[in-house]
Length: 230
Ligand SMILES: [Mg+2]
View 1: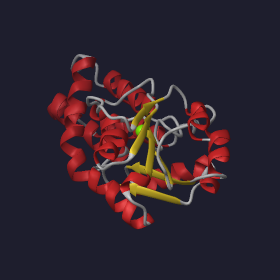
View 2: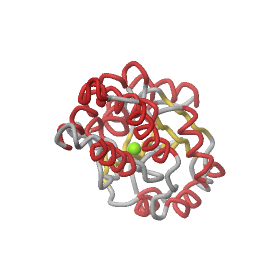
View 3: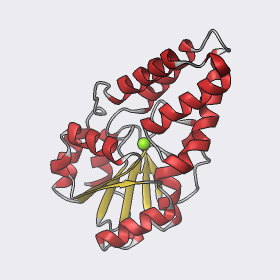
View 4: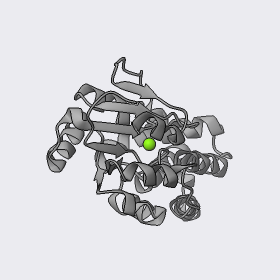
């Protein structure tokens, strides 16, 4: 049983409750193939990555910013050969990404059902409001949660704001997520507890060194949560 007196369990959504990152990586590969007549596919992916890093602080997370970054990359790589057909092909890739088949992570529903009888649960996700709320609705998981927060970023301040809103202290937060930078490091820094569940694909943007803390735990699957918390 985990030490601590948690009043809320916060769950990350993308790649914690449902699969997400691999669909983005697949879309990126399709885009690289689309432009493969102009440059090496690895270089195309690199340019998209750089454009994403430039666009995220201005436009936020989500597939609309991903599309913008693909178009910026196409403009840089193809120059005057960038035409309407290329724009429409890139947009189709992102539209298909936004409408991909929805897949919950294995065991999510059972685990939330068990934990919600004992704890208050909240979702802490970042990204585009319409997109994240749409996925949440599609997940059918709303009955297990007291609160959902779609944040522009997941910084220490964002978690402190969420704690104030829910009228809890930072040390009463238990955060569960896959991303060290968004889900683990900021929660540990404000005095909360975090459970890391690594996902098979990590977005380069989320990579950072794991903090060292006795309030940080790691499990292989969300299925292992009840044995830590009940
Ligand atoms: Mg995540």
